[in-house]
Length: 367
Image 1 (cartoon, helix red, strand yellow):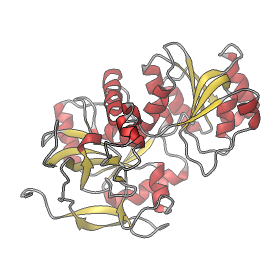
Image 2 (cartoon, one colour; image 1 turned 180 degrees about the horizontal axis):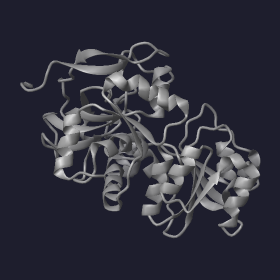
Image 3 (cartoon, helix red, strand yellow; image 1 turned 45 degrees about the horizontal axis):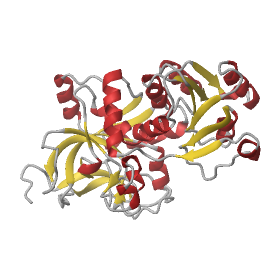
């Protein structure tokens, strides 16, 4: 397959040694496209908590590996069997690469296909990701961007947005019901607040940082609770607005040691906690499980079709992502330092291609 307008080499930020900084250097452009692959010119790549796990060697990554599993850009080449995409399409790239299509999860309910047991790779985790000028992705896991949604919004949505979207929709709550989000002011949490409000839910946000509480409130939460007031007082504040019962569903996106205990305690008896955060261990007080029958569910990213639904809600409701923008891979260590400082509001992104950003502005993309 010939690519006359695409260079052979590109700049990428790779993990080449565990527990060491990214190496920014020239690598080959991935032109060997499988039948359902897209090659995109990356406009924006986003940093996620999982990227730190990759750097630490926790996820079995084979090195070297280009970081970032949250990317958005423009399609520049198509595999031979790609359907529904054209060169020039603006897209949000999916994390999963080459689902098998034949296992029980792929053949079962569509919104469980992301649990495919025989998929090829996770981009940015076990296969090269989006901290690069060009990236290869799976067209079946990729979504076109609505006209108003920008690359800077779409890139963080590729994993963070998809993950919290599924957590919120998995609650299966009706308009006017209460939902709580523990860690509501983080990269996932502040999106969850907005998604829940867009779906007509009443939202309680719990966070332990000034920056997080500020984002919780600006996202439209009906109640923002400072976790620093102590476990018992947090529970008391939640019960004040929920008829002394607690919420039917809580989504936990905080890695803090006691976050799951708080999530269970503010959930009413027989209610559900959806655990998204990934600490090394999740320790649940037995009283919550046994005496109060609080149920725990895990949740991963959403499926490709759910991602399209999410983007539609983002477009129709003017949902925004709080981003901390850095220009080019030369600033990647500045982004890492901000993320590690605990002072970051929302998500950190790298603008890989300013020209694409300017072009979409002229097209009227403003979310």
